[in-house]
Length: 288
Image 1 (cartoon, rainbow, N blue to C red):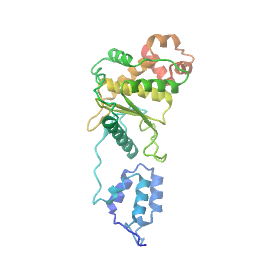
Image 2 (image 1 turned 120 degrees about the horizontal axis):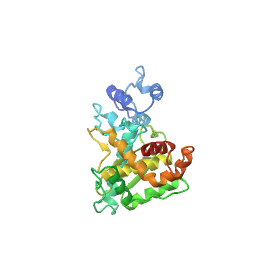
Image 3 (image 1 turned 60 degrees about the horizontal axis):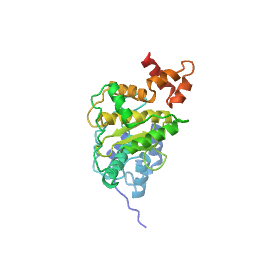
Image 4 (image 1 turned 90 degrees about the vertical axis):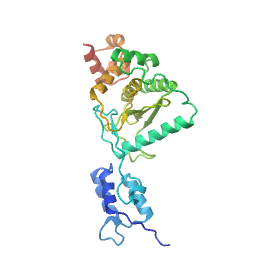
């Protein structure tokens, strides 16, 4: 049976290696392992369809893009989602694919679920509010309870958000397998705003205490009417820190915190509230 080969432009191969999220050592190995990328190979830049598909999968790039006449222009996406440093993250291919997947799920839910049938009044209801008013808005929609584990607290808060119409999605990587993990240092959470079907995404690789914090943080963005998926705009990092303070105030209410806070055992206080020791320390400092 005759093999069907396709011609691939060198600039598209260079583009694939430029945008891939593979580490340098994996890129080098992929180049070495791919015979049709060796200039002395008979079918240089003429892979079979199967070989090109394998290459595309390995580098995490779209198969069809490698057949174009010139490299495609990727949509300019800038993100202000939660990273470990509360700074705008770089948009890797893995992050980009997760965003697109969540957008597809949101669109499907909005159009086909027959649940997202009316505008949600709470979206933007705390826009322009100060910290105290924002905290009151959070407390209007969520009830904080104490559980024996952060996992149970996360599940309870997630269910409460679902009850008021918010989609909460969790994944630890892009695609169906485990070969494209989503690192916590790159992305913890983001929100896709929609009047009918707002969506909060949480990185499943994060700890449950961090997921709890991210969940409330993103809900506050919804109350402020602020979409964290932006195109061509910069987010004020001070606003992120402001929201973090409100999040901490909700998860560790002042009266209870003053009763249970133990300077000599921050870990015990953290376990009681289902948050991280770092969050406890910052909360204590803010109340001094």
